[in-house]
Length: 388
Image 1 (cartoon, rainbow, N blue to C red):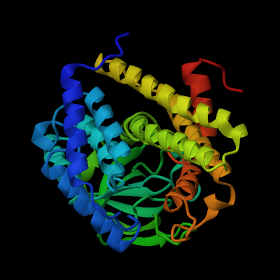
Image 2 (cartoon, one colour):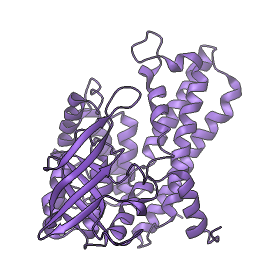
Image 3 (cartoon, rainbow, N blue to C red):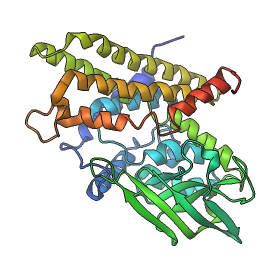
Image 4 (cartoon, helix red, strand yellow):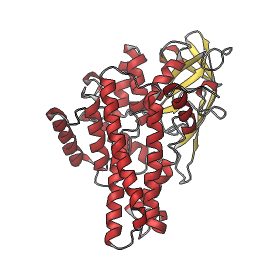
């Protein structure tokens, strides 16, 4: 296996590094789950798009640079290393975007992809329901056809970016007599549609990072059906492969955090406050991030050769989500009581980033399908073990 990057790939990386250094906002943007922060991050997406850094792996015709997966991974590494703002449209560009390229009509791709890449339209995911979390096949929200329209009734919950997003991608049951994964359809729904009510759901920090969605006679035109009617399960599985695999969580995020963790340990050593017993945990987190990096490059090489990721994405999801928790937990153990300080406190370290990162990491083993479900998938579909 050749682990060296080509001259072209390194030149691309250096170009990305230089652009980020010249364009990252001087002051941190407000939190994206506030009205002001949401719009500030939308503007940042527009700036990325102007110079074709928003979706580098997409075709040039849709705002990208038409580069390969390796270049995209290198860009992600530079992006997180630079400390650039978070991506407010991750649901769109990382999850729905690849699905649109596979299942969307030409008209749908032309309509949605450029506006998605530019941040003009921000997307939320409308999958989970109050009684249907990781078991996607048990959803009950209905979308009954009336002529050219689907009429939606039901509820979705825990919709990330749902409080402010412009569009939603939803899975609904279009055959009321169907059960489990049959009779589902994948719809693209404007967030301002009549019959759709959004109720923000606040996190512990008070920011409305999620929303409950209530459909009451909400009408969605058939032109917004992605894939065929009743074929929503197959379309959704393509999205979940992106969600659990490398599209949503490229290694760059964890590499940058692991480097910050190592730097934190060195700083605490210098001032004499480091708990040397935690060195092994620091090393395990750093090597775990490196291992995930090279496993992802291996996966990228396989995908470029025509291999499908499939159920193996569940293994990746388990690894990166649990690595994220342990990495941040190690930082908090190193910091002791200082790790719990709010960002504005005089003795806060890294403006409270370790605590906020830890709180966010706790959701990783839950979203994109709980890790308990992912272990079942790995056991049955990767290892070939029998069901109980």
